[in-house]
Length: 255
Image (cartoon, rainbow, N blue to C red; front, side):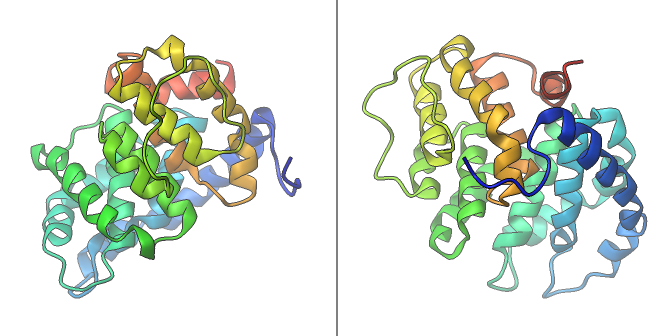
């Protein structure tokens, strides 16, 4: 088991980390102005890194009502964000693209409105990031493996998870401990082979249970958990996409 340095049980995480993110929201009060002031060759989405992490965390820990105002504040900038990342003016577009993917995932999981082009953008950006996967850090790649699951792109998962391919067969009710690539490949295989929520529930609940340790070790962050939830609840559990964050919120808080 990884060494403990911070809260690693969900009651501790909900109480302590949730409050920290709530207090930190004021840092983004001027985000609208910061985005407007960003000029080429910088990307508007470059401003969304900590923001997307905070919104993912609060949607999970406090529910979507806690982030509704912040989601709405950025919404007018989404067309610009998509246009810039579809036609990058510099080579270092990977991190802004991950930021944008994570922000739009919160929008989806909270039932928010995103432009029609955002759906196609997710698919294009995942393809683009797969081509650059070797230049990304391990936490970034593992997050994108789960994002590929959420976007119903199982064939991209091995690229992000550093695997030779998906499993040859799908075995229901497995668990994977702290093996994130194995868990991502399992979800991808389940999506590819028509598995149900019941088939993956043990793996999913085990992943959620262990997530605070991954968070504490900084090997995964909140967007990864929300991407995984979208894959599990929507593609395998047939839950409406806009209910994902609230379903995960109920799971981790016991509400």
